[in-house]
Image 1 (cartoon, rainbow, N blue to C red):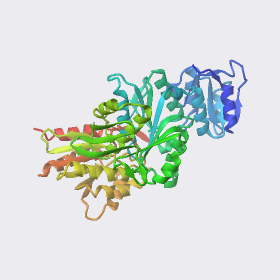
Image 2 (image 1 turned 90 degrees about the horizontal axis):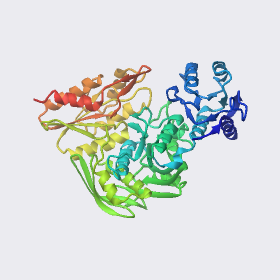
Image 3 (image 1 turned 120 degrees about the vertical axis):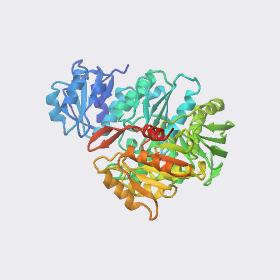
Image 4 (image 1 turned 135 degrees about the vertical axis):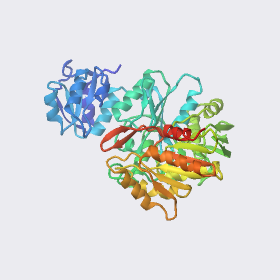
Length: 516
């Protein structure tokens, strides 16, 4: 168990020019320089001996009071709230930071005692494919001992650390939560941790100090550009590239845009492996991991894999040609980790990713529903052509919306991309935030190419039912694609986090209504 004292945390912050001052801290005094065994920024997770981080625009002094009642021995705050909180927690040692975000990252890392050193940690970033690649890799790593989990996972779908298992809130958690999960993973005896690393996490210090055995760079596109996220595309790209600064080995997709810049940034790592789904020699480089003889059919992909240590025919148990890239990324990581061909082949054959290319066929075969998280122009441009190729001659109806308050470019880009492969589009609600669904859909309609078929159905469940009704009114077999939310079960509406039905459940109910 970690036994660092508050005074040592103060020294650490001071060494990084992040300490404004300390309150009620007396070095080597049991009462005023207690030992610290963890850090939390959510009072629900506080344990005795932890330091509590007072953060967030909506922070209330009552949260600190609750943390102290649960056994917190000190707290970290910014200069703005220091005076007010000292009155709430009179006599409790406090560290006041000049910049709370990097200070929180340092304090969390040190308080949890670097548990990443006991694990093999894989971080995955990219504009699309992070979740799918994470699940493919977990399936392979867990295939060594079927029925016995060996891999913790942190991402946009689920967080599992051997102790906690829950639907995720953020793609990459805030530092205190992140290090709690890393600590739980290590304490549970799991040898691997696979995590999605978002551009926001890299930009805003969430993963500072986290040692990555492997950093995977899948791709880069235009997304998350808004005043609330990344002000420019350059800021977004630069944030993504930061992942290589804390990794031993880089795994890079040779098919990514801006390849030269990505490869240049990856030189910060001790070693680099590249992969490509388009053959060995790509863009002036030889891929270390590559494939050929790709055969994509109903519900699966088959291809021949070549790695530096083995070759084998594999079957990926999920559709979508673009998922071949994600599988190769996972295979390249396994090459780094020393995972052999038999385990890789076995793991790929049993992959299941909730809300990602999830096929839901009707019992009569007339309609196939697909639930997928495709939510930006880049993912739409990959998703649609793949569906067209795998369901030749079928009619395609797409149901999707665009988020409010952020990524405003999507409401213009998504209709343009979807019109290229959809016979009909239904615009609907998707995490509207503080904006009206009708206004977002109107903006999407305005951006829709002339002549493209579309309509607006603001209620998402009604939109899914309507799309299925349209499918059954057609003589042609139809694919109904319900996009952009995957397994998300909550939406942001008017400052509230509101429960919502899963897309897959809505689709199954709509299909069941037409079965005899």
